[in-house]
Image (cartoon, rainbow, N blue to C red; front, side, top):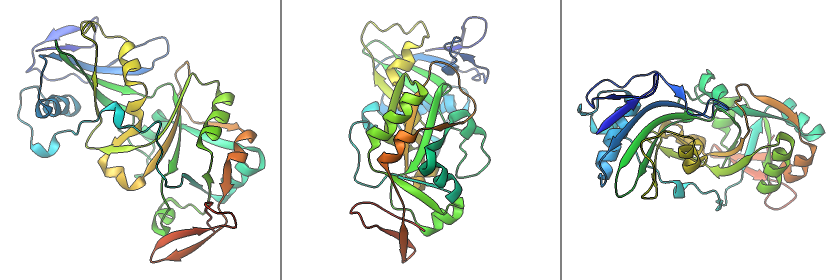
Length: 302
């Protein structure tokens, strides 16, 4: 096993040395991801071994040191992210009335960034681990582990993928919202305004840490780090969140731009209005919000 760490080039470290917290960008031109550490292992590792090595990188402890079982990471495979198959639950954007008014007046909408959510202080809105993941690539010759932080050139729009509860709305101080009834139309309208290079939508998966396992061809070059690794992941890392946020039931829209993005953006997308239905009224029953509207399958809220 060898471990490569960032610096002036990549120095080979012994596997029992402490993983360094320094990092460098995989692609300096658009700063699409930050590299933390790189480990190359033998092939045919068991799932338990993969979980263990990935957890060593995440918690930055020497490889080979014992880890409690409760700290071992879950494994996620890109095919588990349901980009092409949506569930039947409503896609609800909640917010304050003044912001929902602005959207239905002229299409005003705010898109967030992963950097923004990493530093946001609200315990439910913010998440310091956003975009942070271990990418595991393997074939019959080798297995590699790369500690990465992505999402640097992406906008994100977060929705609730279920019928909201009164308690949840109260916690976020929301009192209005809308249902997105045409996901593709809504996503495409925003993509046109942004000039996005790539777009994805899917419900988030919730795991103990974000460890993505992918198969690569036999001739894959493990000896050189490049943005090819990010192409293999293809935004799937941005749809996995830590298990502690599972009650958020988040449905996420993501757009990839050609350059680094730090702050949220407010844009006007009047075309997107027609793909949404404003929430009208609610009936609260057993602390569960049930929606009613004059049009079937549309939801509403006070």
